[in-house]
Length: 145
Image (tube, rainbow, N blue to C red; front, side, top):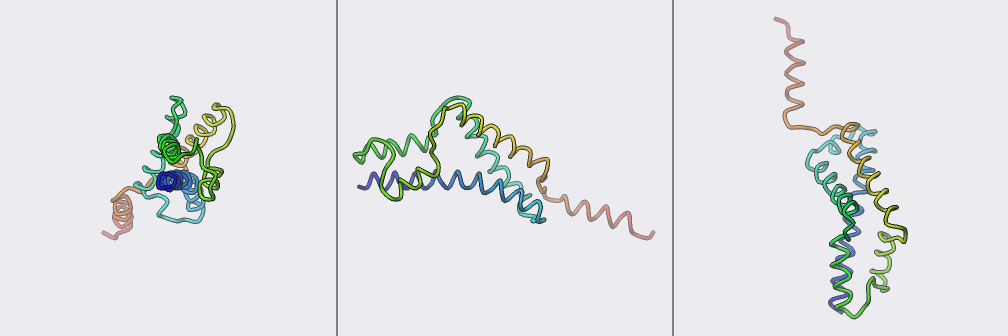
């Protein structure tokens, strides 16, 4: 029983990972349109792009996600043979796992990764001091000597 709870927890972490990547991308686009400054935060954006690039690398190499391996190991220790069919495990698994040929996932991951990288051009990062230097240039140009 404890192994299955641990497996469900790993699945929850996996779903949160996927949600951060997908919802983060949507937030960047919505935030760009709405003028939200936080979507330009370099820490958020670097973590976001690193997370999707990790998925892209896994797909290109053809390796299984470590979270999936860990979940399956826990389920086997709990007496199951893979993904759970209990309430939590069933719904979380059905949200993030689909049946399709591997090339479909690789293409989807790489396309999504390219779109995330494109947001760096569309919604540039905010660097410290950038606003201060722009403000000082503005006041220098507009000051009366």
